[in-house]
Image 1 (tube, rainbow, N blue to C red):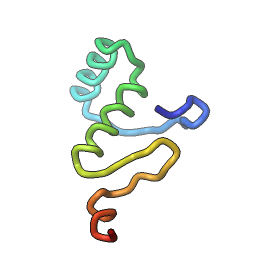
Image 2: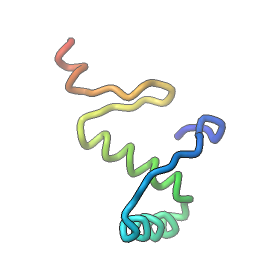
Image 3: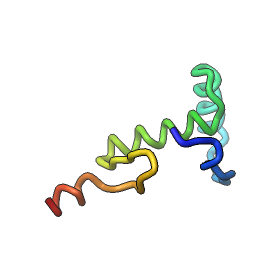
Length: 68
C-alpha cells in the first residue's frame, strides 16, 4: 500500500446505499474507509486486467502483451 504521505484527499460522489455498504465492510475489516476503498479499487483493476506495482503507474496487461 501507499504511504500516508503519498495520499491526498479526494472527493467522489457515491450513492448513499453504496457508501453505507462500503462503510460497513470497512468497519468489519477493521480498516478506515480510504484503506478499504483503495484495496477494493486495486482488486477491481487487477480483475479487469490491469497491473499496479508500488511506485509505478497503472498499466494495462493487454497493452503490455501486445507490445511484447
